[in-house]
Length: 262
Image 1 (cartoon, rainbow, N blue to C red):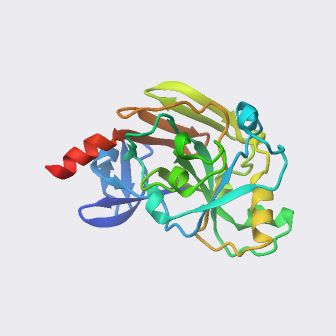
Image 2: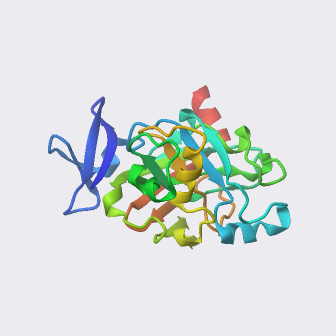
């Protein structure tokens, strides 16, 4: 099952795909609307946001000259706040001083029931579903080019989420999915979740060994190779097999400043 959350006529609604036309959605009350006529939110009420860095073998290889860590070290994990979230079809600010800002197409895992000290074979039983994340990074701000810090990875409206939450029963194997990113309709990134250094089950098993995961907690599982610099005005579409397509547009800091001054 696929569900979304949107704002229409001043209220938040649960929404579903229109099976007849991808340009439309259907609200819980049965009303049919164009996708472009609503404001998209994160597709569920998000709790703690837990993100992984360097969790794809090909991305590690891509950055190998910059790294001083092994490929199977303990996961590189960091937290993000709710202010970083943005929904489908939203706009993300590109800082005026950034020389290299890139997208990151990531499989996002949503926890469905409390998880603490789980055995590896129990981990996936605690997943509610999956969605798509495009987690932008400004490489200029990264410590040593690869250790995430707040300014690089927790920027307002730089973690794009959605459009759909797909129930776990529709994704029986989260390690069997294709990820793609298009910039202005040109394919720039492609990978497989099979190439994760730490699988979804391993990540949940690891995290639950020292912290309690709660319903609504979100785990961002990293991105494959193929990240490129993007500019203000670009349209970035991140896709994951079986989940859908997440659309985002970049706008310039100068444009936003001028808009506020008007």
